[in-house]
Amino acid sequence: MKLYTYLIFTIILFSCKPDNKRQVRKMENSGKKMELRYAKGFSVTYFDEYTELKVKNPWDTTQNLGVYILVPKCKDLPTSLPEGKVIRIPIDRVAICSAVHAGMWNQLGQANSIIGVCEPEYIKIPTVLDGLKAGKITDLGMASNINIERLVATNPELLVVSPFENSPRNSFDKVNIAVVKDASYMEQSPLGRAEWLKFEATFTQSEKLADEIFSKIEKRYVELSKLAVNTKNKPTVFTEKKYGDSWYIAGGKSFMGEFLNDAGANYLWKELDQTGSAAMSFETVYAKAIHADYWLIKYNEQNSDLSYKQLGIEYNLYSNFDAYKNHHIFAINTAKTPFYEVGPLEPDVVLADLVSIFHPELLPGYKPKYYFNLKAE
Image (cartoon, rainbow, N blue to C red):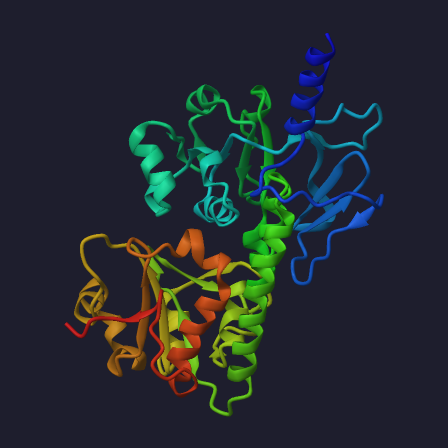
């Protein structure tokens, strides 16, 4: 009988002990805040029996978009908890709607926990691709219209989504799945967006690892920015291209606007006072950007890389821009690089690409990861 009791005690003890990947942050002090240096959209507070996560509404920061109460699985549920969605951690089965969030879980060494993804065509993580091929990971369809039947059949403990303003209420409440809203894409700074890695880390109790990763990213980013912002020459730049009748221009307070400023460039729409994008007519962009020094584009083409000739054929007025004439168009082919899932998580690398474009003398011999000049022909 004594041996049986000892075995039961041992099993309970070790079931509460995290593995090496899950470096649990000790909650010794009630009400201790997680240190956040750049992110403005969330907060994490550690209490003795639970952790409280709050996500601010990016469109009305006086309100919360979500409140999540995390309680370790190896502890009894406290009798008294604040208002919020109760989630038992660590999470072992997660469904993810965005490539960047999949990238976060992979960066934290938790890719094996992913059992469902939306829009897998934007994901390049080998573990996820192998899981999809083997049928271990479910394709949940479009992020804007998740296949609820597949989601229920997959049975995740957690679903991570990107919230959108005024989006219609979906049927998640009808299923027994905790839905967490990660609004990292609304952060104003690249480092602020990357710091949401700490938010995702709370669900797998890997905050220490997240802090170590982020500190290295921050150090490299700050060093590069100091190099670039002190340069006297600030080349003018604009971004993207028209889709249909609209040209979506990033606001001056968006993370892209911050990137361009930190890279030592003069972004033509730096005065646009918003964190998202604004739809403009081709004529409006043409009038302001016709003589810009540089043009940055993102496109998705699996079979070939975009050339100047192809861009001119796509819309003949593009060839009138000085950046086109001078072969100063740099682009990311998102079909061939993991930009959407990894780029936001390594802003130091994206910044290095941009600095090498605007100020190549600062990074001699640098080999870009994301941005490349269009093919001449």
